[in-house]
Length: 507
Image (cartoon, rainbow, N blue to C red; front, side, top):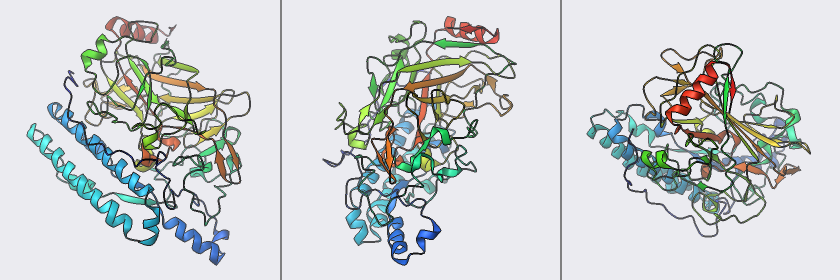
């Protein structure tokens, strides 16, 4: 592939306003309460008028995900286009910071958000979209003629429900349940909290559910189905790569934003390859050290860190990707990282191409919708219960489990694609691959954490845990995701395939 062999220009990064580590500590603060105000409560005129005022507040900014629309970018233009897409993300982050720190001005002027934030953001996005069009066309491609329609962004009010793409988000009826004792949030409908009470712009009480309230076998998102079964290729291969004991972390994303520092706007934990950063070339990855026991596996496995918002000032408390972008609190060390490759229910598997990139889940699912959402939460002893749109509350003696199943069908040609998704696909419900795709070993990542469970009282949450996220995604559990770059040597990859196809359980 030969990617990332030079440093590209970095988008201009505007530093967060000093002292605003949580991004929501201004004026009226970020509003996500009152999401589930009942009809009965609205009958009270005074309370109803306060609720209306609260709900008129814009909770976050939602922008079209341009990268997902660009499915035909010439290889020679991808570096520059990826850099421009990272600039769009930086613009959204800056706009969200302004939104979260100008609540007083918004309360005084109903046109403030449109005139001061969304309007200028649209103009800045249009400049970048014009650059993307020029770069694609200059490389011999054909840019979409309607790119400008992706320039406008919208403000999402607190009462607006999550776009579900026809899904109910894990069998919990979109979150309108009383799991965890929060009774739909339960907050004073007239209150405008500065944050979630823990110095961060989410999560809130309604983002959690007691694991005992999650129905068994409830994982029902269309993505992330386990591909292994009792027919086809039934074996497995487990690679042991540690739990990031050396605390290798950064806020880059070599897949989505190669060559751009802080391209993820949140911190990742890395196991396996020890040279994964924004500026790593393919040659760097191939020559790197690895934390895996089998030194033939230099693959990079990475995911957003998990934090407890307990007031701890982490080493990145003032840094981009950390506290400067709302990712605050104590990073929790993974206690167990099970990395396993399994087969396909319908067919044998073929080797993955070297340096294949796969992203499972969507870091922007809160504003993009559930189309690509794909991570579930459970507790040890309760793993038949998987919550896809809520963090879970585990009972004493049980540990948090975070699971991601990757796409396991390959187009047979490409190790990556312009939008980093089209070259792979999930299995169908019957376990088969879509037409034209071949089955490859399915990567399954299971992470176990010993996390102190948050306390929910009167609709308020204290010391919640949450994954790092883009600032405007408010640490919602559906934004969790997992990343993989295949850097196994040919001998090991062939061994993985042979084990799986012969029905053996290998390590």
